[in-house]
Image 1 (cartoon, rainbow, N blue to C red):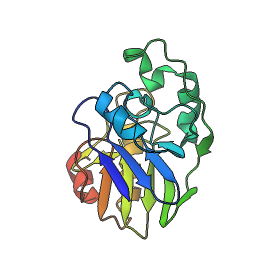
Image 2: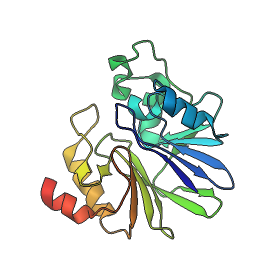
Image 3: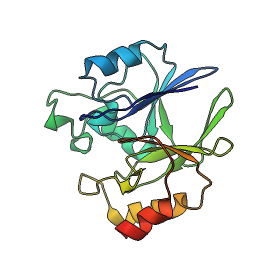
Image 4: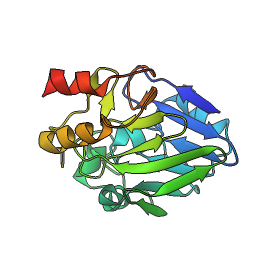
Length: 196
């Protein structure tokens, strides 16, 4: 089962996959009481961050293994300017990363089989999580329903994002769990036509 916390503020959307283990996909900033209550209502076994920005990682629970794309891992551990933590929390010193995810890695969770897709563009280490059998994708800030993530922040690159979207457009996706905005169906080819 997938539990959704859709954010209408600075926090990212937060998703909890509850099955043979409980996986938290992104965690928001950690500064919203209602979101913290939502996360704390589960016994989280693993956190997967789609990228290293504060609005997705700031609320990562302590003493829970954290996984993130390998190209964002060092930035999350060191709290570099790429995390944009200094924008809100200038004293942030980073989170320990337990698993550096590579393109093609598989994360099993009961009948969920999440394939890690390296999708640079929003950050150079951004990832999506794709379940081919269920035809769902956790897209982080790579794309939203009808939109794309910013590329003007540290390590963002519009051409990388275009290539990532072209790759994702070839997948059979029926439901998108984006980093911001509503969950639903999305035609990535229409996004490509509009933005590129």
